[in-house]
Image 1 (cartoon, rainbow, N blue to C red):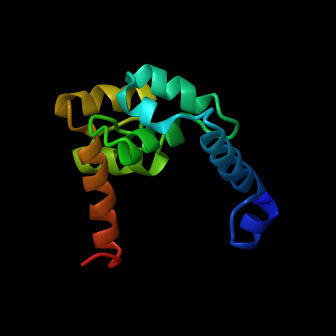
Image 2 (cartoon, one colour):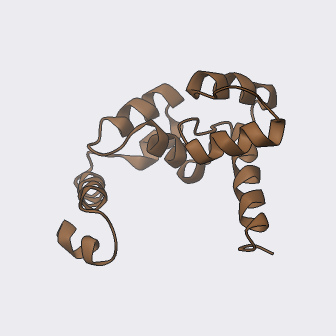
Image 3 (tube, rainbow, N blue to C red):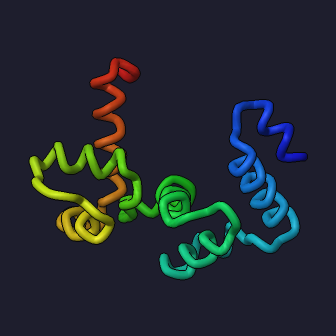
Length: 129
């Protein structure tokens, strides 16, 4: 598929290129998802972020949602940071490292906290009953 086809569906050109590149890597066997399932977090993060257009947030989200690693809290998600800050009544800036420290108290279930914050905000917005 040409990235322009995805752009017509509402993707930015950068996201469309990333999706097409990842799909090609999977089809060519260069991105072996079943192998990543059994790999250590650091290796998965390194492999995914080596792909053009995939940053730490996206890689961690894939690890959480796609690979079922419920201990992963995508700490670069600014919305999740703000929700976590409000939920806990924290003061000051929450950067990635501080999020990691705060979420560590719920190890190994940081990803479930992430989903709770997301679902809570969707419920408050009336998007989920």
